[in-house]
Length: 364
Length: 208
Ligand code: SF4
Ligand code: SF4
Image (cartoon, rainbow over all chains, first blue to last red; front, side, top):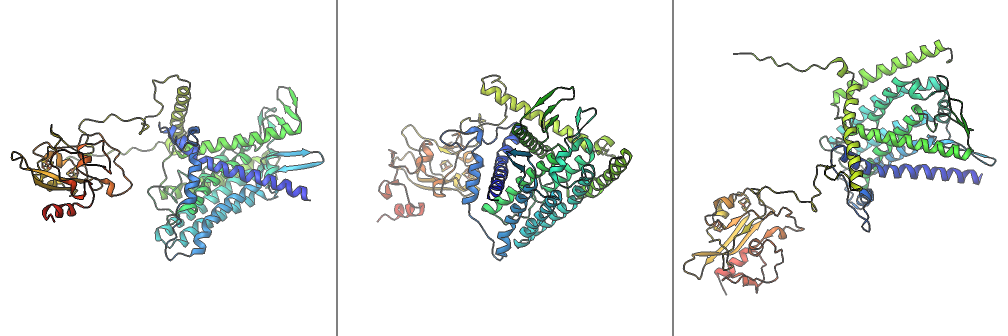
């Protein structure tokens, strides 16, 4: 019992530590990547003992700055809610990571360990619930600020998040139909199959390409990053966190990055085979041309975790690239895209998936 | 009256699909990204150093060439004998739209020179760098050609340049000793430049 608890604690520490550090690293990646795209150099100062490490310590400097900054609470705000809002945002973004499986089952002697903080049958529903609860942080921030601009910003944000959540959910129904499970661990296992004589791994992107595009777009809108950053509008539009400063603002900032990573994790898990490596089965590689390479369980697990990490990082990279490529949508365009574009496409996708599955005779 | 019909560009079907256009945009950003990434790595190994990876200047280390007409920090011209060329005509103080020049003129002991500035302060925190003071000066006594751009200070006081700093752009406050050897009467505070100019004026006009 104690052992099981310890193992869970270690896994939780690894996942949340990793995710939080990745979020911190994102600030650096954001600076450097945008700099390279725009022919600049990017942050390259903040040396520690003369080592600059390409400006990597700017993330540390940021954290110190955020923590030591004055925390201004405007007069007349609801102090409890004002303080709670950023915590809600970060909390719901963080706990959602618990249901992400980041590796195959590890066998240690007698014990079989799931590399997942919480093995939930309805993991997908759980993540969705947490993503939706994230809206609370946003609306509370606007509401508690006693600032008309802030509340307008938070209403904009809420409308955007709720609209896109629908498209997001319907896009995933297709995936659910293909895998027949809400358990993310099982969904990843289901992606271990191959088609076309074993050449193409049957990842979600192969089975649900349209669903993937809709999911990606809606998920980007859900994370409130460019080109869907109307709720924040870093420089021009007044967003919901206008009355926040210091670390409270930092937490909203952190939430953004956490949500980006969460969406990257979800996209990897549902559409890019999670921890699956092409042609890798639990007992080793089975190449379609007949070659085989047996592997020990721990190597299999290691490869799985590495593959998952690389895929997530690649998604983060692509999201960042999209963020620095596309200009912001206008608000009516945003709603048009959500309701007249993604929503019908997602519904049609579900219908087509159902028909195809009946024709293939495999599905329900 | 001729009517001009403006042809608004219509999006083609291909462009309305969004996704191909997004990919086109991504192609541009990816091209820049990998080109610059490659160049940065190549520079590390001392290759391709003739191609710049960034168009930006690393400012404090790498100074941009300044155009010769750029208006930068002021300086007061100095005569051969070390005295300021300024004759205290007050034209620059009068023309200054920001009202940031303060001059206290006094009678010069040399009968050939009528007046000279006892104090000449420019509050750079207020100056708008219009250059009118330079234009208006009959003696070409004030110029804005020092090339100093990094005018920053930690207090408002430090943004106020006095005569010493204006005559020698190298000097920065506090100027320890008044080294001007013309009859410069800033020694009202015992050789120290401090206090407001009103105080100085009072001390000069009503000596106790
Ligand atoms: S540049 Fe313009 S504002 Fe500045 S001191 Fe001269 S006249 Fe005044
Ligand atoms: S206009 Fe020239 S001469 Fe007249 S007070 Fe100003 S600097 Fe001196």
